[in-house]
Image 1 (cartoon, rainbow, N blue to C red):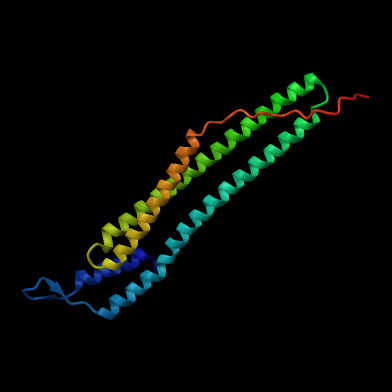
Image 2 (cartoon, helix red, strand yellow; image 1 turned 90 degrees about the vertical axis):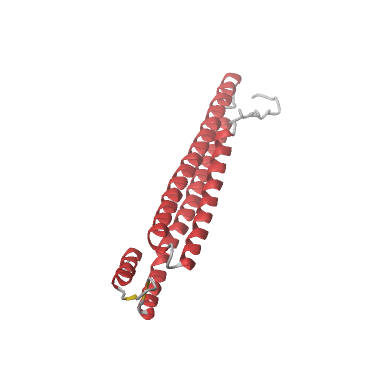
Amino acid sequence: MTVLEFLEEIEDIVKNAPGLPLTGKIMVDADELLEITKGIRLSLPDDVQQAKWVRDEKDRILEDARTEYEKIIIEAKKQADLMVEKDVITQRAVEVADNIYTRADVYAKDMKLRTFNYMDEVLFNFQKKMEELNDKYFAAMYQEMDNHFAEIGNQIAADMNEIREMARETDEQEIKPHKIQIPVGDGAEE
């Protein structure tokens, strides 16, 4: 059963429970509620696993962007080294290398921003889902679960703030021109 199905079962138990006269309270079977609570706890790790997957996916995307950036830089250096034969070719190599460095910086920045936006959206949706579950089912009956969801929500909010701050810093980061040094030979030409 899913968490929502367990919660619907709890609602049915509460709606159909006999009332105690003059108290406004009801009588429920504690064992039955504890069994349902156990089922809910067993279902929750899927949501926790999804949050862990999101975090792992963020790290993987950032690592892929870093690897791609390094490949582009290595390729730029190789191309620049091959073009250092004559002055005109050397000047062109400097221009091409600068262009490649700039493209690599722009690409890395774009990948970071897209990753941050994706993570922000996933975390926002997850936080919204957690708030909906909390508002609809757990507010009065399960204070302990409410506290647990609040901790998860706070962690998600902290992660979102961290991602947004990293995105803001990345967005504000100026891409500086690269200074390419031309290797100088021993001066003897054959």
